[in-house]
Image 1 (cartoon, rainbow, N blue to C red):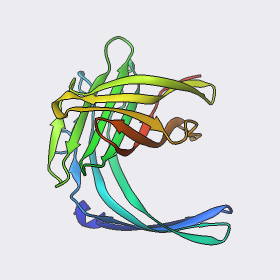
Image 2: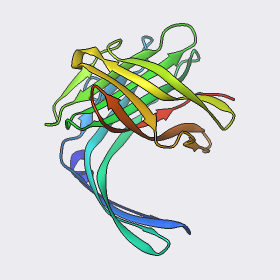
Image 3: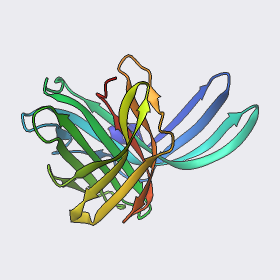
Length: 210
């Protein structure tokens, strides 16, 4: 069972500047997005299998300049795979995960399209681990501000609305320049959340070209 495999994880890494050694302990269930883990990405049928573990509590140490510092917090793990790619008319996605101070979690994304409105969908994850699928069109994601990142204009500030849950929040990046220079370059990084709800989260965005 994936739930047993991911119930407790230990992660260690080190480079010249710093190292960390942390343990992640799940306090809730794995979450399957979409219908039993089948997550649709467009009206045309693109989809993936997708699950998360958004209930990790994290504790451990970060070592900076030889000094070990105790750290604690929350974490979110995603696993997603597919035999399909996005359609040629889909240009990328904007994905958010939120840890709300209420104890609820939210996953929401939009997949951008050249010829029509973006496809939006999500999952509301209650503090007790129960879920409700947020249906296509129930999520509203609006750009609030852009930064120039690696020669690209990237929307790093957002407004996220899910009226069915009275959610109307703004997100701001901890580091607007969080660009990942991988073979498949993209933006990802932590965010802070304010508005109708407060909390922290993570933002991932792909497909923004110079």
